[in-house]
Image (spheres, rainbow, N blue to C red):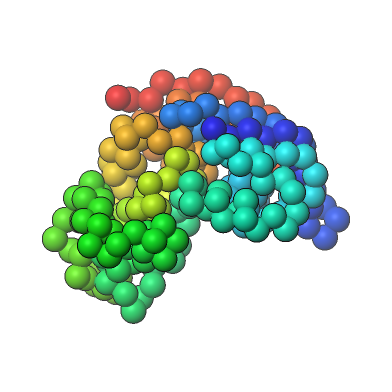
Length: 226
């Protein structure tokens, strides 16, 4: 589902990604761990086309996003790949349900009634059934992150990318989000998660990718808890 071949990305002449190669099979979950500033988030952003690589190749969800300025392909990728950001990025003026249904209606052209139905199903999945009318300011950090996960799933993506999904949360909220991600994993999605949260790694990952100095220095199988 994700194929990386000698991916290079530089900023100001310094390689942040230094020839990254890896594959992640359909339905598998990999956690990307390593020191801060070593390029993990940049790799996620390149996989979703938010950053353009300098050389190498990326194939994700059947799309080749290596070519520069291929906007139609990038649009297709973003319809297949969800991204959960570290800082939630919910629209404060919209309700929880409106945040979740915006992309299905605008991108997938789903009728509003169908999008609302799917949104409520996702809110049930992430443990927020009945909160569809709340605004982000009325939610805790853990609840906001759960809404962000539901929003990423709302367009029926094949791949879910997560950038430090528990880092901004206190211990109790972290466990809330870990449980949601374990539930999401049971849906059979392909997931790549950047994290420093080792309890999340041990309970979620099929594979652990150890990242340092712009490259994957070790890959090992993990035994996630069912």
